[in-house]
Image (tube, rainbow, N blue to C red; front, side, top):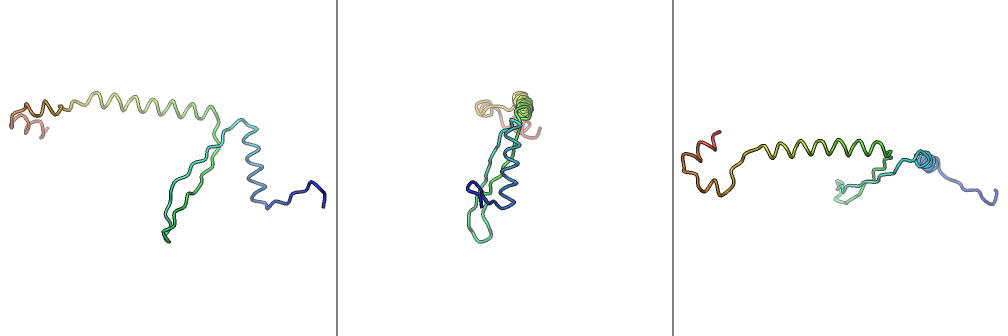
Length: 100
């Protein structure tokens, strides 16, 4: 064997090759994990690795901002009486409001 030779299994080689391709394409690696409990009760943290481009990230943020803006408008348009207004209502006003 040569002096600078490294032996890798095919899975590791493919992961490194894919990583190199994505980084050369100016993509960013995103690693997320969530806690999972197996049937034996052991806790594991499965890792999810994805690559995203800058343009994809900008589009996702813009979509999320638009969705949140709509949600804010919906919440502003809902006319729910405050606790003080509820205290000032008569029984019949409260009952009418509650049924509507």
